[in-house]
Image (cartoon, rainbow, N blue to C red; front, side, top):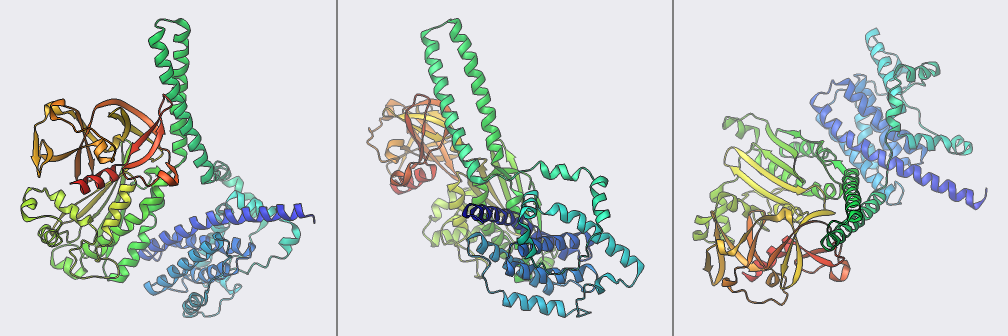
Length: 618
C-alpha cells in the first residue's frame, strides 16, 4: 500500500470519527432528556426503546472505530436498559442516577476523542456501578439466547415488535455519511472488527428488504440534510459582510451621480440595476444569516437534566416547563447564552423554589414550577425564566444595598422597584441567609449580566414576595451585522448600535438641571445624566455651551440611561462589525469598526464601555 493510500485511508477514518462525534453528541443530548422524561413515566416502552437505540448506536459505531471505553460503557448501559425494557428490572432513582452518571462519563470520553487523546479515561468506577445495578436484578445471568424466551405470548409479541421497530429505526439512526463511509472501509479492516454480541437478534434479510417499500418516505428525508462545517458558514458570512459593504458603496456612488446628472436615461437604468442588486443582496444576506440560525432548543435541552439533578440534591420537587424552543438564534449567540441561563436556573431552584413542606404550608402545590420560554420580537429574542417560589424581598435588597455602599437611603426613595431589583446583578451581592454548593455566594448574577451585556443584550428582574421571580433577557438575533445610528461630533463620525438607542431629541426642547455640578435632564419620569460623546471616548473635545443647543441621544443599558451629546445625526445604516485586532481591540468604549459606503472606516461605539466610562467620570 502506497503512502498516498495510507494518508487517504487515515483522512477517511478521521472524517468517520468526526461524523460520529457530531452524531454522538446529539444522541447523548437525547439520552439526557429522555432519561429525565422516562423517570416520570418508567413504563413508557416507546421511550425505553428510543433510549436503548441511542445507547446501541453509540456502542456499535464506537466499536467499529476502536473506542473501547466508549463501547464498554455504552454496552453496560445497554444491558441494564434491555432488562428495563423486558420488565426484568424496575427503574428507581438510584438506577437512574447511575445511568445518568454513565452518560456523563460518555461525554468526557467523547471530549477526549475530540481533543485527539483517544478515549483514555478511568472508567473503572462507573463500570463497577453499572455491573452492580445489572447484577442486582433477577435473573442475574444475561444470556442472549434466553432473552428471546418470553414467558407469555403477549410479551413475546411485544418483544418481537420492539425488535422489529429497533431494526427499522437503527438503519435510520446512523447518519448517511457514517454508514456509507463504514461500508467503504477495506474488507481487511472489516474482518478485524470484533463487535460484542448484543441482545438484538440478526434480522431476517427478506423482512429487512421489504421495509423500505412499506415506508418509502423515510429515505429521502435523510438525503435532504447535509452537515456543513461552522468554519465554512463563518467564511460565507464574512463574504456576505463584504458584499453588504460593496452594496452600500455602490448605492452611495449612485446617489452622488444622481445629483450631478438629473434626468439621464442611462443613469435611470443603472439605478434600477443597483436597486435589483440591493434587493438580491438583502435576500442573500437573510438566507446566509438563517443558515447560521439554530433553534434555542439546542440550549434549552440541557436543562431538564439540570433541574432533575438539582431537585435530587435539594430534596425539592421541581417541574420545568419549556416554551418556544423552536425560536432561532445566531450560532454565536447560542454558544454564549447557555452559562448565564444555568446561573439563573440554579438560583431559581436553590433560593426561589421552597421545600415541599414550606410550599404546602403556604397553600402552594408541593411541586414548584420553573418556566423557561423564548420568543422573537422584531430583530431581538426575548428569553424569560420564571419561578413560582418565594420571590425576592425588596426591603432586604434595600438594606443590603445601603450596607454595601451601593446607594443611600435618600436615593432609594427616588428609585423604582426595577432599579432596586437591579442591585441583584452587582458583584458579590446576595440576600441569601444560607450559602449552598449550588448558589448563595453572590458570584452568579453579576456574571449573568456581564455575559448578556457582552452580547449587546439586556437583562431585567422582577419579583414579588411569596409569588415568584421573573428574569427577562433580550438579545439581538445576530452579532455580525447591525443597524447603526451615524452621529457626528467635532467632525468625526461614530456609529451607535440602534438597539441601545431609546430616542433622539434636541436640547432646545429640554430643561437642563445640575446635580453635583453635572448636567442632567428630566425626561418624563427619568433623571438622565448627560455627557459629550468625545468626553466619554477620551478624545479631544470642545466644551459645549448649552446655548449651542446640540442634539442628545438617550441610550439605555438594562435599567440605566445616559444622554450622549452630539453635533448632529447623519441617519441610519446597516453596518458590518469588523474587529480592531489585538492592538486596538481593547480600546474602552469601542466595539469595532466598519467601512461605510464612501469607503471611510468608522468606529462603532461599545455601549457597555460607554456606561463604564460614564460611571467613572460621575
